[in-house]
Image (tube, rainbow, N blue to C red; front, side, top):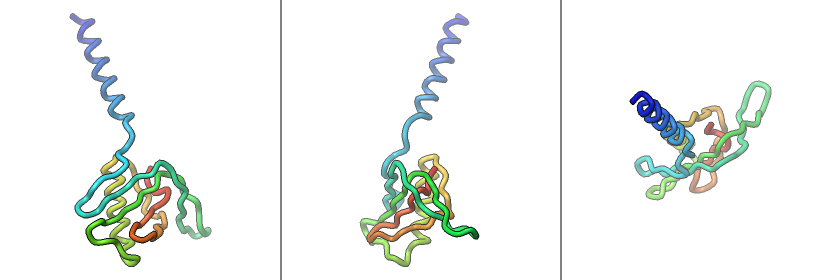
Length: 111
């Protein structure tokens, strides 16, 4: 009986490990916004010492209903931060975004 309980506990832990090892979803929808996670990227952030490279996953955000404009970087960055969090990743808010119409791209922003 104790052996069976031990095996069941071990199987439950194995299931948790398999769940945690699953890669994040490549694309998610948040209202009208779609976020696309790309596996790797090197972005930049601005510091007192100048521009510093940042490594991480790249997040692209777009709106298929009402395309994002060049003046909507803050909105896109907020959506990208939520998209990283929804994938259990951390968003680096200091990463500089790039507008590549109709997408806002944050290279290296998710870890």
